[in-house]
Structures are given as structure tokens and as C-alpha cells.
Length: 520
Image (cartoon, rainbow, N blue to C red; front, side, top):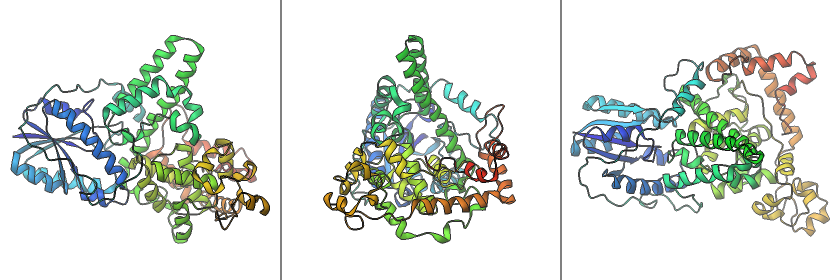
């Protein structure tokens, strides 16, 4: 007669509803399953598994202090459950809800069937601000706020559990994975809470200013994304700590404190967007594979150019800011949001690549891969949602604005290290004698641009603008907005606002409304 607490992307002790409930339910065990479907999934990389293994080591020690053994089992979840059921006579399975890739939906259906067949009661609790079986987006923001402002679940003080000899955690080699040389942040909830505190007390002071440049964002952003993705800190804890810090700064009243509070208010807003985007995948799991807007079906798929794609993956596109960002991401597992958006925008508009394969490549690189955010953003930045303004980032403009001295490019694209700054964002414009003097001849030492940026962007805008004018696409956009769009009381929908504004413009300007960030 045992309750099993199933840990998934919630590797912590604080604010953990299933764990708190299990402490009141009699004999209990903890479980984390390393599932073959996860390891074989196209989004998984050894860096993710290594980070989880570190987090499990910390979690196992924390739970042991409270008397709860944490079993770490390898195998399909239903097979793991069957083994444990025979050994411990499971009666209840407690877990958080999960909004994940398609394989997790299939797994959960199989677990539900197994529980029904064995008479095991499976109880799930919400984990973030995502609402399961949501009927309408109306009122979603209020529900998010209510959930985030509610009291945290009490941390259990102790458990009744069998005495077990636990084997060592598996290694990457045990799991058939090659070692990773990506420098991982410290895993576990203690490290997550320390990172949060450091951001709120010190590093977040200039958050709004720092977040756009890959140079300043590495320290000026919260750096909580990987800890949040694997649940080493709860969204509620981050939200409440942020609001408390903002209130304290505002109470101090001096100008510096008010500026700090304003910076953190920008961060607080992004916590809401985190769950807003995850809700999209919860409501429509198919967006992992197919376009939000079915009017976009066939738009890019037949023209997929694998040579372009592979050059993009390697950081060999001939556009230094794109290449520097990709190489940095592959090496470190992290990149700030604006540069992530630029990578996707470049793949979608300049290279005219459908978002699915670029999305899988990026998912393997991002240590903080979160399926709901990831696939929603891949489509938003690729222009296939049907409702969002097209955002076409200029790599040259991004380099000049966010790497004005060329430090980031020189670090990650060392072929260009000796090239004079005036040519660094567009090295193909350097005269031949300048290229030779810098030991970087374009086309030999560093690739020439894969595409002509102006021509590629113009063609992309023509195609997408023509598509969005079609009556069927417009009707579909209204339906997508109704199902997935954000709600702001008293304001028309984004689609409505765009159309209203377009009606006031001359025809030659209307098309630019849908690409008003083409030079961003």
C-alpha cells in the first residue's frame, strides 16, 4: 500500500504539491524514470541529460534527509510502474501535470491506461500557470494571477518510507550517451534559488537594458531558464519573490530603487508570457509538427534547402552575427532571447527554411528547452501563426546595435578577428587588400553570404503578405486569435488592431505593417 511520487520536470522539494500530499498519505516512494523515448527523441541532447542527472543527485540527497527514497529507474514508464507495483503494491500515483513534446502525451495516455487496469489512483496537480482542458482564453490572465499569488505548498518535514539500498545514479555512458563538453550551470534547487536571489538583489538592476545584447545578457538576464525548465524552482516562487522585491524597492523610494523596480517589472511580465506560450501547446499539441495557420502549409516545405540548413547549423552562413550566435549557443547551451529570435528569423525569411528542422536543431542546443515555449516561438518568429506581426531581423543591424565594438563576433568567429570594425558586420564589403591584410579572404577563410539579404527578405515579404491577404487566411487568423491570442480587457484583438491600422494607410504602406520590424 504505497504512494509513488513521480518526478518529471519538477526536480525540487519546495512548493511541490504531489510531494506535500504524499507526506500525508502513509508509506511513500519517489521516482524519476529515465525513459528511452526521451533519450531517443529528436529534441534530446546529452547536455539535457547531464543537467538532469546533476539535479537528481541533489534532489535525492534532499529527499533522503526527509526520509523519502528517490528511485531512479531506466525504461518505459509503464514497465517501470509494473516492476514497482509488484515490489511495493502501489495504490496511488502522485505527479504534476506536464506540457511537453508529443511523446509525453503518448506516455501519459499509456500511464493512465495502466493505472486504470491496476486500480491505481493517479492524481495530478497543476505545475505552472497552464490550465488543462481550457475552454476559452477569456479570464486566463486572472486565473494565472490567482494561481501564482496563492500560498506555496508546504514543504514536508518527513515521510514514512521503506528502507532501501539505492544504486548509484546512472552516468551518460551507462545511458549510451557521449560526454558533453557544454559548461553546465550548477543544478538543483539550492543553486536555482541562489541564482534567483542574485538576480533580484544585484544582476537585474539593468535588466531591460541588458537583455538585448549577447554581451550584457549573459549576466544581466535572470539565467533561471534551465532551472525553470526542469522545475528546480517553481514558477510561483519566482513570481512571488520578484513581486516582493519590486514592492521593497518601491518602498525605498529613491530614484535608483525605482529604476531597479522598473527593470524587474519587465522581468515579471515575461513570467506571464512564459505560461502564455506554454498554454498554446497544451491547447493544441499539434503545433509541434504543423503550422498554426494551415494557410501556410506548403509555403516553405517543398523549397527546403539542406545545404543552407546545414550551413546555418554550423554557423557558416557568411553573416557574422548569425554565425557568432549559433556557435556561441552550440558551445554554451544558452543565448539571449533577441538573438534566438534573430536565428529563427534568418532561417525562416532569409534562408526560406520551414521551422521544424531548425527548431529541432535549436531544441538540442538550448539547455532550457521547454516545448511549449519553443514551438510557439519557432512559429511566431517564422510567420506561420497567422496572427503575429512578421519580425524580420537584420543581422547587420543587430551586429551594429548589440555588438558595436565587435567583441562578440571576434570571440565566436575568430576568422574575422583581425578585420577592421567598419567591415565586421558585412565582411564581404571589405576591399580585397583589407581582407588579405586581415588574413580573412571571403570565400576562402570565411564563407561569402549564403543569400543576398535584401532580395531574400523582399521575396519572403511578397509571399507572406500575399498569403495573408487571402480571404481564407484572414478567416483562419480570426479563429487562431480566438483560441490562442492574448487577452487585454477593453482592447481589440491583435488581428483587429492590425487591420484597423492598415485601413488608414495607403496601399504601398499596408504591406510594411506586416513586416514593421524588417530592419530590427
